[in-house]
Length: 181
Image (cartoon, rainbow, N blue to C red):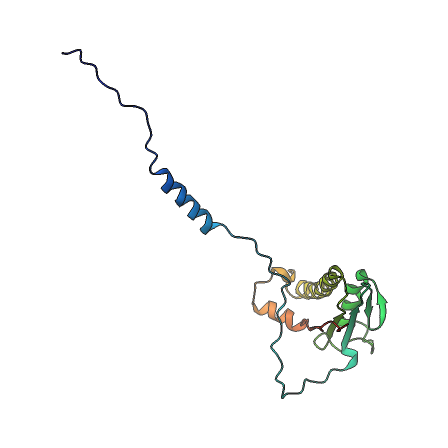
């Protein structure tokens, strides 16, 4: 009787909680993962004008007209220009370092008007917007370095310093709707 064999338990693992663990991991993954969503072009559009209020007059010398035609050719104030020239010409137009009467009176009054046609290649349009934004970024960086010793991007968001640089070089960009053709 003493030699009674002991029965050993089998080496099975209880798998009933594995489904719960897998479900919790799935929920954790879904909650913590950010999905990359294309946000498009980051532009802040101005509020619509009151139809009863007449828009303010704009002096012709303060307006830089940029037209991108169906072939992707760029015209700046009716003069042909390449995409690589756009930024430099805009910087000169906005700053007007020589007080040229054909350029903007002050950077605060300078307005850039971009117009395209429906057949304008999308890539050229985006490159044009990049050049215009690059011109303003260059001007703001220069002003920020001169006044605060750091590039514009290093200034704290919505700080007084950032606002002063924005007031010095306000982005006034008009994007006209493409012509109907």
